[in-house]
Amino acid sequence: MTFVDSNVLIDILSHDTTWSDWSYRMLVRRSAGGPLLINDVVYAEISVHVGSEAELESIIDDLEVTMLRIPKPALFVAGKAYLKYRRAGGIRTGVLPDFFIGAHAQVTGLAILTRDARRYRTYFPEVEVIAPESRR
Image (cartoon, rainbow, N blue to C red; front, top):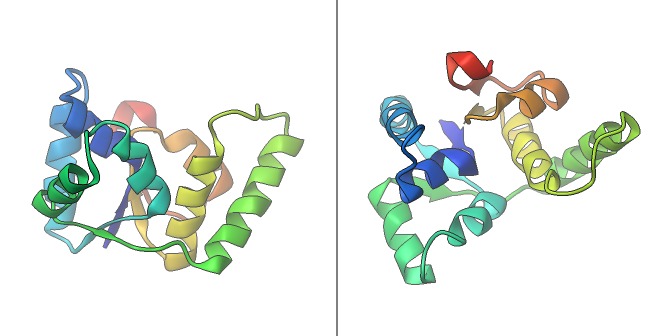
């Protein structure tokens, strides 16, 4: 099973000229090894790129991605990781979703497919991160 970060799905939805091919290839490769999963946060982040909930549900079905709710232990771990980040001088805006995603992967023991590995590797070192070589 692989947890899929928002940026990978957004690459595909937006037909990003730099990353959509890599993201799609990796999604296909990881799906061969088991289910692809997202959580509430990823669902919300990718909803910005579609016109309706029905369209988003169709895309998720087409990509064979399964929604997995964030368990309470992951919410707790996310808060603690975010606190560590803030105490280390991290900026406030736009990062909390990454902590929900990283904590969810950690608590469930899932690898995470992302293009932005740095924060996950720093705050969730137990999580296997699948990312482009240049971003490791």
